[in-house]
Length: 421
Image 1: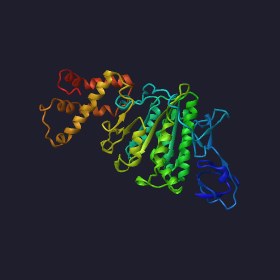
Image 2: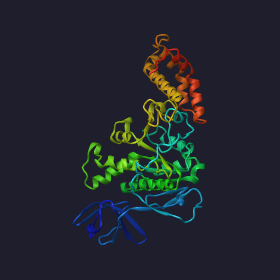
Image 3: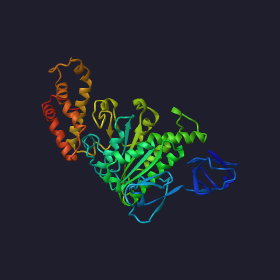
Image 4: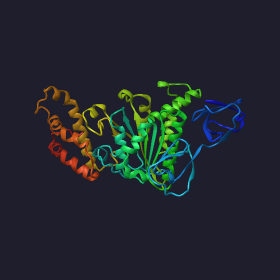
């Protein structure tokens, strides 16, 4: 945080500041304004700054976005750092504001059709519709990055925008080279701010990624935004807000965190009737599998569903390690037919029943014949559990496969031997 004098009369909170030095332009954001001057959060190192350096105020922070961002790694300044495919876009760019109001509720379209994901679990039990916003809740080492890469390659989208906020620099390179399917690179923009960069740079990188997604959406494209992670973005905001003098609250997160995270998430979703959509998947880090920590708790109420990755499931070697009983997609039941919803409810009921009897099964105390529903849950569990880890050949084929697995339970339900609630 630095102090600037002589700009109080011409600046406001949130305005962008540019300080010119030989061979470089340093960017910052005004955090507080007083009669004596302003406090500015710089996005990069301030080692080169000296008393008397000249600063310029821009009343709206912006970035130059264009199709030249496709196939490239972009930094928080909006500059191309690495290119994986040749630039064939020409020189056309658009000046895009980093802070922008979301689409008006009166103009916003409803959720679109279900998107195939090439995974059984997200093609059936946890559908993702066009324009939906999903949270991916996970601890470390449970396959989060791999799942994001599979969704990036499996979901239908005209453009893919990936925000890597607060990741280690090695992981950024590995994600591009090893996790991301190479065939989607020509339609993909990656914006990254690594863990070593200042908190302001992490926030600005997140807004650059959002500006890119909105640019492609306004062109009429269906956009997939993968944001990893929303927790690091919230932590960066916490650091900048505390430096600006905000009062800390739960886990030191200032009260403005909810507003800032909500504003970012609300910019995604279905677009206006004449534009495309932004389907968004926001990853949320849960330390020690604490799903009640502040960021996870606030995000659950903002998004249209959440997918929980379980360490216990990952330790069994089942990937993706999705805990379907703790996950929910709020596009249901609308996104499925009545018959499909019946199958999904029956699946959850059987999995819940098996979870209840699992301790007895492991102890060798389970006895067949005492509860028909428990008998079915035990008999079908292996097949249903395997279904969750297998790739999909399409939404309809996944439901046909699931119907075959559930046929004994469907017949028992018709005979009144399984609860119909």
